[in-house]
Structures are given as structure tokens and as C-alpha cells.
Image (cartoon, rainbow, N blue to C red):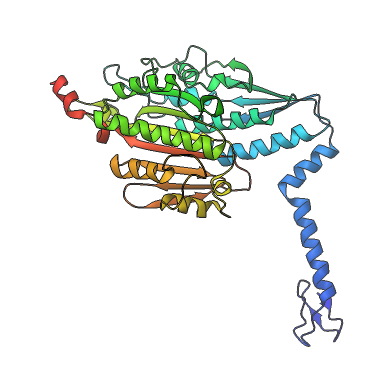
Amino acid sequence: MRECPNCNSLIEQDLYTCPECQTVDYGWADHCETLQNTAKRKYHRKTIFAEQLKVHSISFNKEYKIRLSAFSDSGELGFHLSRIKQLLEASEVSKLKVILNAASWGYDWDYGYDWDPERDTYLPPSLPLPAIVEVSRFLQALLNLNSSKLEINLVLPPKAHNATTFINETGLLLIPSISSITYTDHALEPAFRQGCDDVLIPMIPINSSTQGQLSAAFHKGFDKLANAGNFKLQHRSALRRVIMEAGENADIWGGGGWVCCFLRQEKRGTRGFGHQQKYFVPAQHTHLFLHVFSIGPSLAETINETHEWDAAERVATGNSARLSGGGRGMPTILDTIIQSTWGTVSISSGNYTRIITPDGLTREYHSAGTDYLPGVHLCAIIPLAVIADIQSNLTVLA
């Protein structure tokens, strides 16, 4: 309690106006506001971390460890990216070693241990595809820091494990920012599955060096993937155009981007999954995952909107177009995927994610905190049951 300067009545500590005489104590109001601002500066996690760097001495070879999981996303990795930037800016740090531990991805692969070589045609359902793509986006962002102080070590499952083979085939290990790779011992015997080189397209860059076009390696990989997925002929060219359009958007809007595709089997015809029909067709329970991401400006920054929600709304309702160049932009991509293939599209930009489904519903959420990965991440999930030639496949089985 404190006394009113006018009538000496006792009033609450945080009140500026006396309830008795209605006198406003402007001096006390300024005092409280100053204290609040000081507290915010003092206790904000970014400020605390920066002050700790100044006060405490940093070891010559500082280690920053990140444990990756199937749920690593833009918010989590953006937080780590922000801290790494602060550490690199600290003059006491001469070398920063970032250790990315992805050993748990081996357990994610082994989770589907009840395998059947006659039916497991595509990637296992437990494989964390979005997390792997977001880690790729994170590594590209670290590469953009262009710091001689930075050293990145990637920890993977055992070298002979199929999960490690898959990670290698995605192109993740070819990112120049990775300084070294180590392999762990695994508590379980590695699961053995057929090769996955025909059911994925590794990360393909699209930038000024490729003139905004997909490489010949992509088109060769797409043909193999389409054959493995039994794509109908009328869908092959349409999906190829969608991927090319999305990649060109990433190049024009994001200053360069990356494209990758996967065929992941969500269910299997084995006993544990309840599918015991005579002719189980894997394509009926498989999805095509298309990922396109950039690490430049966010969606709102690109189309000059204040908030990411407004930018996503413009894109989803077809009121946006490219700032320059040809093409019909993202609205056409959304229409083709959602209306023609009954797929689902996720747009992640800044701390905002919007998921658009063919049932007409929109789901959206904001990431916690203020740090996130730069750029835009577009993910499309298309059921092969819609675009695959299931009938021909059944005829062959019969």
C-alpha cells in the first residue's frame, strides 16, 4: 500500500488513480512503466542469454547439442538457430561445434518391425518425413550464416542401418554446412527392407544456377517414382507441372529453394494392421509427399502483408500472384492438389502454419515463441488411391 499524494488515503501499490479523490499520480505511473520495461528487458530469454554470454567466459571449443526427433519443427529449430547466431556473435567464441543427434531416426525406422518383403513396397509409415525436411531447411539456414567459426557434426544411426541409407539417399548428407558425420551403436538389430532409391526424389536445388528449373536428375527420379506408384498417365503430367510450379515459386519468391518427394506406405497388409484381404495393393494405402522449401523471406514479407495469416489467406483464396516472372502461382497448386487429387496442403511460414484439406476445412496454428526458420515450407500429401492405376494392378495380381 502507498499514500495518495493529494488526500493521503492508502491505495493499492499498482494503482495510478486514487479511489477516494480520483487524483491521477502521473509520476507513479511513469515509475511503474519504467519498472515493467526494465523487467521485460531483464527477463526476456533472448536478453538473459545474451547477458550470460557477456558475463561468463566461453570455452575455446564451445559445443551446442541438439537432439533431433520425429517432431522437430520450424519453431524448435528456429529457436536453436537464434541461439547459434548469438553464440557466433560473441567475441569470446573462436569455434562453435553444433552437434545434431539424429540417432533416434533409426528407432523410428525400426518401429515397423513386422515387415513383409512381398508387401512392403514403399517407405515405412513411421519415417518422420516432415522432420527430416525441416532439418534440411535448418542446415541450409546454417550454411547461409557463412561463418568460419561454425562446425557441424551430424550423429546418425549405425552406418549399415537402412535408416542411414535412406537419409543418405535424401541428399541430406550432401549439404556443405555438415563438417563431419559420426555413427552410433544401435540397441536393436537393424531392420532389413528393400532399397528406397525408386520411391524418393532427393533434395533438388532450384536457384539462379539452374535458371529456376528442375534438373534432369529430378525428371529421371520422378519417372522412377511414378512407375513405383503406378501413377495414371493423366496424373503424371499434371503432378509434374505442380512440382515445377512450386519449385519456380520457391526460386522467385524465396530467392532459391529445394524440392523432394517421397512415397510412404501408411498401412501394410500384415496381420498387425488388420488388412488380410487376398490381394493387398500397397498403393491403396500409400501417400505421395511433396516438399518444397526456401530459406529467404517469409510469405508475408514476400507479398507485403503485416501478418503471416493474411498472406496465407490471400494465397488460399487465390488473390495472390507472383511479383515477377511467369506462372500462375500457388493458388493453382492448391486447386490442383486439393480438387483434382484429393490431397492435403500445408503452408508453413514464420510462426504460422495453415493446413488445407479436401473436406473444405482449414486448420491453423501458431508456433510458440518468436523464433522460427526463415523462408516458406510447402508440403502436399496426395493419396495414391486417387492417382494410381489400382485396377491394372489388381488384374496383374489376379
